[in-house]
Image (cartoon, rainbow, N blue to C red; front, top):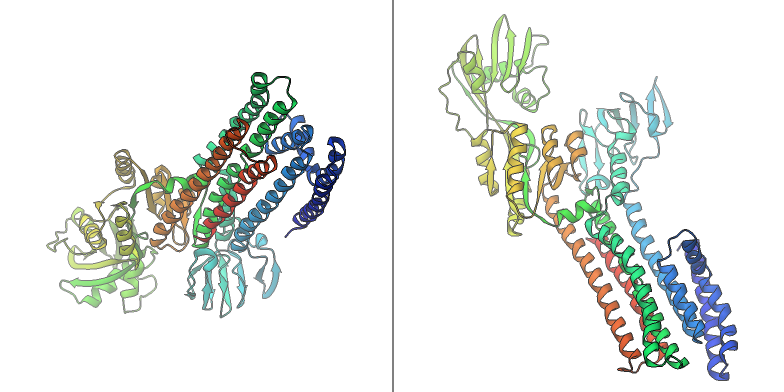
Amino acid sequence: MTRKQKKTLYRILISASLFIAGFVLIKVFALSLLPGILVMLPAYLLIGYDVLIKAAGGIGRGQVFDENFLMSIASIGAFAVGEAPEGVAVMLFYQVGELFQSIAVGKSRNSISALLDIMPESANLLKDGEIREVSPEEVQIGDIVLVRPGEKIPLDGKIVEGFSSLDTAALTGESVPRDVKEGDTVYSSSVNLQGVLKIRCTKPFTESTAAKIMELVENSEMHKAKTEKFITRFSKYYTPSVVLSALLLAVIPPLFLGIGSFAVWSSWIHTALVFLIVSCPCALVISVPMAFFGGIGGASRHGILIKGANHLEMLSRVDTVVFDKTGTLTEGSFKVKEVYSQGISKEELLYLAAAAEQYSNHPIALSLKEANQRPLVPDMIDHAEEIAGGGIKAKLKGKTILLGNAKLLAENGISIKISEKAEGTCIHAAYDQTYLGYILITDTPKKDSAKTIKTLSAKGIRTVLLTGDRKETAKVLSDHLGISEMHAELLPQDKVSHFESIQKNTKGAVAFVGDGINDAPVLARADVGIAMGAIGSDAAIEAADIVLMDDNPSAIVKAIAISRKTMQIVRQNVILALGVKAAIMLLDLAVAASLLTVPGMAMTWIAVFGDVGVAVIAILNSLGAMRL
């Protein structure tokens, strides 16, 4: 409990003691109007002075109709009609409710703060043989940092020396440590568990993974959902309407029922005051944003970063999910599955292919070099040229190596008699205009891809695959995973047009899941863009509305579940608040019209519950989103 909350608690306890003592004096000694007011006044001023000051300040700024104004009018009105104990009770229980709300809100924010307490405080900069402890902001791209066991990695980079296991739970929600070695990419705020690592930084601190996560969550409140915006607009018009209705309720009935009767005026003014108390919209204004904030925080615990409440709300309405293939549903790490050679051995074909790709870092090139068992001679290739959309043309001993798809070889006058129906990517090879065979490269599906598609389908969500790969390869994957619809051999602009067609013919919201630079245009156009955060490109992450830090497709199912549960909590809060308030307002009118008999003090307590009690219940319900 904060100092401010403790101070409020002390005020409540002292004021409650004075209220009880004054209530006993009024009932035992039957004090008249003025002495009764004087007895209750200290308790009222102690518990309500800040509300009165805020109400006066709001009036001075032209912001009249807020909850402070409603509570002030209701409590002062109670004193005016001789019901001083009710005036104190209204303010006392209002402050009790505010204290509970403050504690609940603080708990939510503290949970998120603790969850996102991932920012590294320092970095061990290795320079000129010396280690200096510096702020992460001081480290430049290319600098080497030393990370000891138990320390957080300060910036994104590549390991240049050492091997270890990393705890990435703060970033991805994954509890299993990740083994890393020299050459692997690592991300800021991962915790080094074992060996000493030397890491070459590849991004400045402001662009590190940890900094981006903090920025996403901190800015999430800037993007309000439609529901939040509606509640804000609703309160703007609702509160003045309530004040006007209460005024009419206090004035019009007595004009017809007994203009000269103090008892009639007092009764209807009391009814109007109860109306004001119960009508305060704070339950909606506070609890609805709290539900979205809790949902975003709950998603963060699972490594799902949602950039705003509007995206969380839109995700709950998704009925179609469109997937990219490589790196999204598949591992994105290619393996040589089969080698078919013609005129030379398989080992020699692999050697020539690896030689042609000697200086390439493309995933397919890496898979060829990994499969090759013979050491490559440095500079054995005289010249290598990458052919866009085709492959590689290289020179070896003055003769040309062609390595790529069938189109590349056909353009160079080399006929291929091998079938293209293989389940994977065929890399054809030719040397000195002689066809040498092909190498089959496959990209295996992620372990949870099939389960993800199955779960989405079971929830009635349509799945679509858009990929630039060959139709045969895409169909094999699509059939294996159970995807509803598939479109292959698409260029980036084709992906956009196909996606827009899907979007146009879908009633609900359409989400797109991707990871590459070529996916950024579709991510930006999607109702909900979802990017793979660990291996995804910066362009994809920037364009996306939601980022999955662990790259597992199953996180999409979790994200949709969280969004739908959050919206369920929002609807529960709205129905609870409006329903209870409407019921108490009708009860108040029934009492005023003498259709029911309820003691005045009891009616006030009911009204206080309708305002403060419902607000506390709604906020506690909202905190449930943090545990999703």
